[in-house]
Length: 188
Image 1: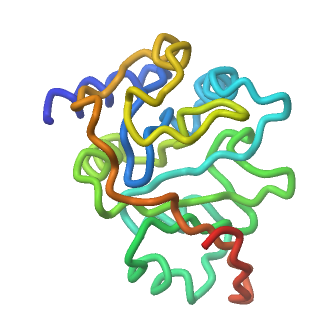
Image 2 (image 1 turned 90 degrees about the vertical axis):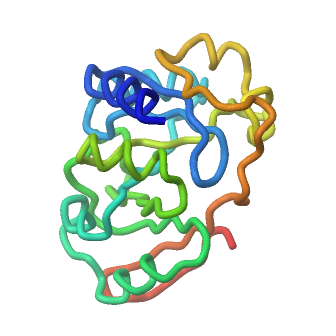
């Protein structure tokens, strides 16, 4: 695993794109601050209108780096979630503008249950974009075999793993958390 972490780190550091299993599904990863890398991710997804992307972090203490004000409830909500949880916060910052939604909100997921990603993000020392490795009207890939071959060819590195291995988790829960603590569930 150490070699894979180092290789993925080097690719991300130079603005490359990585295909990897995550704490949810097989995903396309890149540096959340690198405009060119984020653009490549959108191109690989072949969406007519690019959608905002998820920024994954490995330490809860990084939340203030990516938004102007962390709602008080966010700390416990994120830390004690028993499954992957993506939270949409107001006023995102310190990422490519193409990671943010049109209202400048940012979607962040704290990765806790995937050793590879926790170590990779920790080594990279900043947020990494994650988006499912599929295109419009394709099903979400649970194994590498499920990923469109064009996406596999279009990335700079595929994290080696048994191709038939499925991730244990379902899709992440998604909620929007306003600065005042108001919660709106987007996907349960």
